[in-house]
Image (cartoon, rainbow, N blue to C red; front, side, top):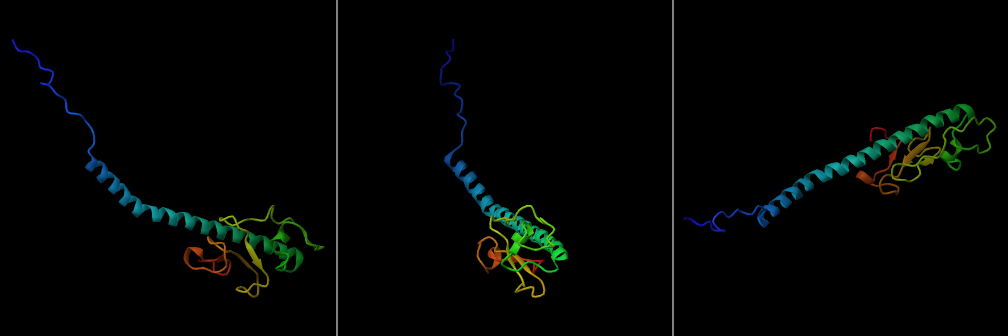
Length: 148
């Protein structure tokens, strides 16, 4: 008669070795290093498009303001002139419900006469860095360069 030994039918324990886990972590890290910059670039591109749309809206409303008042608001009156009357008799607003902010949470800038559009006005955002000037992702976005 044969006796069943408890060790005779040992089952192999299932699990991952340290090497297998390290290989998976390395693969995920490499994929993250390749994919992450593309995702962040897309987020910046979306903000730039939103800023251009905001600038376009302000430009459209400035044109209506000019039709009513025969001139654009001066730099001191700024975009606020689209929201509340700054003393014009022919003001027929409000042209905007509120003063819009750029996608980075800063106010759009306004200058009349424009330094980049001397016969018109400049409306622009300082971009991601919130400061004048800059290059690349920190560049200003304005109505003087619509294709940018």
